[in-house]
Image (cartoon, rainbow, N blue to C red):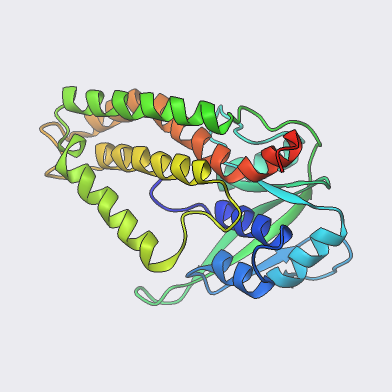
Length: 264
């Protein structure tokens, strides 16, 4: 939860591009981030992988007017609508982008090469057909914000009961480090997103920081660090993690949901 999903970057900056808020070059630069290169494979009309700039333009001509995020986990097809082949690929990757306006989805496959300390990351987005249906289990921004406030309180109380130091200063340090990385390199969301979406995404990342600290092994994270106790923490925090993932998806998808409701 501390790292921004690539599907989130592609959807956010793709939406900004489709709405005319950013240039193609700026959108692609933001999506690629620290990766070496992103390519798109399986795009209709293209026999070979193409770059992101061409791919986003082609998706627009195919009728795509927005991009949604899916962040599925075992037993929780969050943001997906089928068919089974696409859902399975998205679950393996733990993320996907689902097009709005045309029945396509994109699933990332990550390749790493190079020696330790100088690893180059290349990403191939596989285009697959999707079922045009409402995405699974995605809350509204208002629902996500209310659920996150409760989740943050529950997580803090639970970690305190479990004697996890991460419920206090350690978690705050992790969150501060995340914010410092974010401020150096990117906006929380792309231009065009409502302030409430930014707020919800930041809160989801804060909850994710607490979960990451609680489940991390090693010294300095509370009195109990055995493998069985770490597993118990993860199980106890599973509902909180689920809430944070749902909120992330709600934030990334908010501009498309607003368009569907006719807000914009």
